[in-house]
Length: 537
Ligand SMILES: *[C@@H]1O[C@H](CO)[C@@H](O)[C@H](O)[C@H]1NC(C)=O
Ligand SMILES: *[C@@H]1O[C@H](CO)[C@@H](O)[C@H](O)[C@H]1NC(C)=O
Ligand SMILES: *[C@@H]1O[C@H](CO)[C@@H](O)[C@H](O)[C@H]1NC(C)=O
Ligand SMILES: *[C@@H]1O[C@H](CO)[C@@H](O)[C@H](O)[C@H]1NC(C)=O
Ligand SMILES: *[C@@H]1O[C@H](CO)[C@@H](O)[C@H](O)[C@H]1NC(C)=O
Image (tube, rainbow, N blue to C red; front, side, top):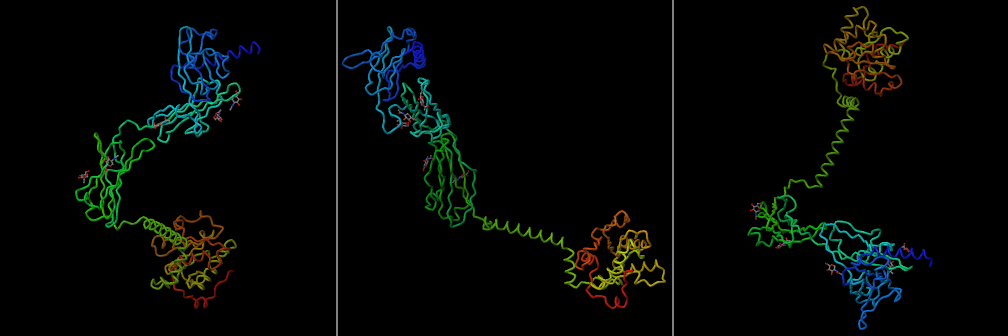
């Protein structure tokens, strides 16, 4: 070996042995096969690294007395500085050892235990520790005496490895009880040795006394049916020697129908004691109703009571499932009702027309009026209003009169020439139930203004006539409507869309019929046939 290598090795060994704690206790138990060392205390004064040779080791070999141990004796037992090392310790190493430094002596008795073939630890070498429930449980797995040589540390609980953990730190629970073994793998001269340290953990109940208490409200009202059975459960949080009992009246105590169960106690994992005591009434009778059944927990310092009272279960009480069904039905009905209302709003017009037809209603018989509607339109036919003109004198009478039996008053057809026009129009509007205004751009600039004003007056002031406004698309811009017309409800304004409104079943005609007075369907043939229907020019 090179000189440098030798000194390096020596230095490493010195550092290693210097890090080991000295051993004071004189009775030592070890298990065979594990590395072990002896190191005297109080040698600091006389031992320096250069004086390693001045420490001498002896072993009591029985009849032959003390024998000095030297490095040459065995390769298994080594001397480094002031440390005697065993790699590993064997059964026949048992005995008394002493070290001598100058005048200082220290003696140890070594007991070597046989390895337990069936367990990962030896029971004789187990240390026991009690941990109070809820207090911290700390198992660090540290071995400072061999720290440089350890290259693996594993932790076992009851000989089952706890993977990926080399220490435990938690609040103790009862489930934490068991044997915890820290196994340190140590390498020496190319061989692996294990050092096992085992601790026997016992979790003990806390010493702090709690104030006993019964869980839940102080008064429990229990619905009961006559003839049925009932169980009243009383659960208390208490100390080990506290009393938990039911107070029964004299009558109940002798009644076999009323039974008190044995109390059942359990420790929760948090270390609290729960006790359950049940009172059983097999068949409820009248005398069990409306009396207090008291459950009490008590110790020298405190008492807590809870009362139960049985009341007749209200028959009117709706059972849960019926209630749920009721809710579902109610929701369903509400949804249906809302849907019906929504449909009614959407199809109001159709419904009203349907009812008129069904009941054959006629509101025109008794009001003494002659016409169902006076049609007001631009009398002269210009190219720009030809469509509106044709609609007023041709389309309207064709549908309303021939199809639906209304009687219209159309100026060009029904006004007898020669009378004073203003008076005539006035009286005709008076004799009509509705005023239909066929709106065109030039309408308001024209003489038909008169009809409009007269009609508006009757509609808005005298409330004698209802106005129906028919607009043409492209919509005549609302700006030219007189303010009074803008007051009309939008439902009384209809829009004619030539392409969509032609069919007699279209929305336009339905809305118009809806605004017209109800009339029994008697197509008004005679007169329309007697009078030639005007054709568009
Ligand atoms: C471990 O602790 C329990 C409870 O204190 C005890 O009964 C048992 O004997 C101990 N086991 C050993 C091996 O010391
Ligand atoms: C421990 O260290 C030794 C050498 O020091 C090596 O041979 C061995 O493989 C190591 N074992 C582990 C588990 O790392
Ligand atoms: C040391 O313990 C490890 C597990 O930590 C195991 O695999 C190995 O066999 C043991 N070695 C000896 C010599 O007991
Ligand atoms: C259990 O019940 C008995 C009476 O039956 C009582 O004396 C005892 O204190 C109770 N134990 C607890 C823990 O409540
Ligand atoms: C139950 O407790 C109430 C008060 O909490 C008391 O008035 C009643 O007498 C007790 N009943 C019995 C049977 O102990």
